[in-house]
Length: 207
Image 1 (cartoon, rainbow, N blue to C red):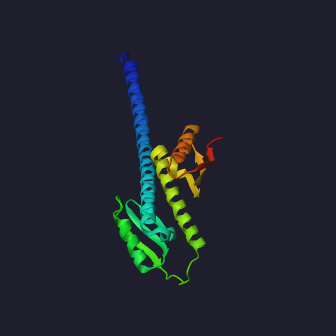
Image 2 (cartoon, rainbow, N blue to C red):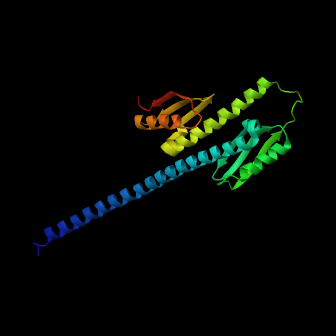
């Protein structure tokens, strides 16, 4: 009668051990699921940021093309296809035109036009001022083009690069994760039509 008791005790102990291991496994799985969800959410947010940046560049190019100097006073704020226009333009008709231009850009779902119209002073600008304004427009267009090329080549990392253009001379400033992406960014900028020279102000993270 007493021979089976140690065997029964061992079975109970084994069952308890298996139960404990099962609980640990389930607990591990439960903690992994939220982590995966957080990572997926962060990746989706980064992709949306990149998409918004692409749309902002497309809008800037379209506004600069249609409005010229007036587009320099417009700030474009995209959010998942919905675009807000803020800033000041010379005429109310220009503000209305800016909204129509924005609506014509692929990917724009809705436009919130918050542009303020201000009348021109009526003073006749000198030729030098007109030339300066024209160069500002050209510089702004070149900056957007370089930014688009960077996004095509290095994706979301282009959001960490600041592009400045002046008479065809383009400077790139910011930090990239490795030397390979830095090299690609510089070559992409150099290959952009209208770029005369590229000034390298980029840093590699961790160096």
